Image 1 (cartoon, rainbow, N blue to C red):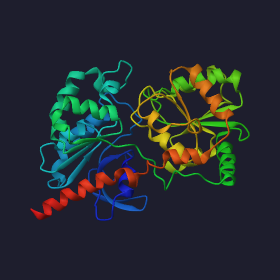
Image 2 (image 1 turned 90 degrees about the horizontal axis):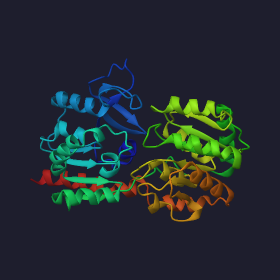
Image 3 (image 1 turned 135 degrees about the vertical axis):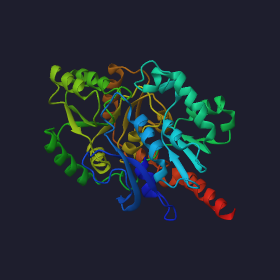
Image 4 (image 1 turned 90 degrees about the vertical axis):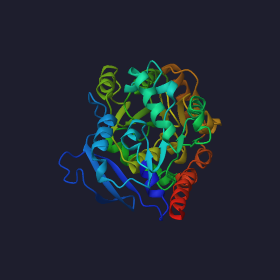
Length: 380
């Protein structure tokens, strides 16, 4: 999402990113550099070394926030627009005179108060709410892809009533779009050869973190069931995370080596290739905001089977788009997979479902708010 924000930003907006690097030998650590993201130049400041799929005792967001607080003298933050995607990172610079814009990708009741969430804050809800009360009222505007999440914050923070809106997830239409049937078949043959999968069998694709929120173990159980009903359906998994070893052990123990394949961590273009090569995208999440991967799949013309989470019912509104599974069980997901694969494929119906959710359409009010803020400062 951050990449799309950068690449789609109007030319009159200068973008600077304070982030991380996964390379421990990176000589650019803790200094400004010019980098290119999808043809767009920006200034980048790698604050620390880490990898988001590796879980440490102290969460990455906390370490990032602490580093940002200690090094913020290296950034000229006064009078700019600061964009945050995590509540805690805003604490590091909350007292600086600037426009502060927040994207929160969750619903408090799902990820802070839910008993099955793996989010660290769920173990310290009092601390979370203390931070929320300190940070949110200082935000100039708040967006979330969970419409019920926005309503929750408006109810608990009346000051945010006119400063919070629903903002849907988007799929980059420069990357995710349907290819010709001939190209799809070529990709399918090539990608299956790389993994040892069978291009003649049907393919379901999953791209997400291997973590509790996405519940990939539910898919492992689903594919074990499908060996009886539809043994010709393969599952390709793209991603990484703390559950990977458990997933691989399940595949080996259930004899699913010829049905379940691990593609590793993939970049956007590689994910788009798999979306076009697949017959179905499947999502087993316990909770979501508005799943980016769901929109990307539809934009590529691929139907989706998903659990009933977040904003999925807003997007998947017809059988041609796929199925929303009411009950989170392997049996129900397996039934939905069989139903979708048994019906005629309608790629254009899927594409139409994703059309409202492109970055330029969705992000226009965000860019406008940034531009208006700086115009006001120039006129002061």
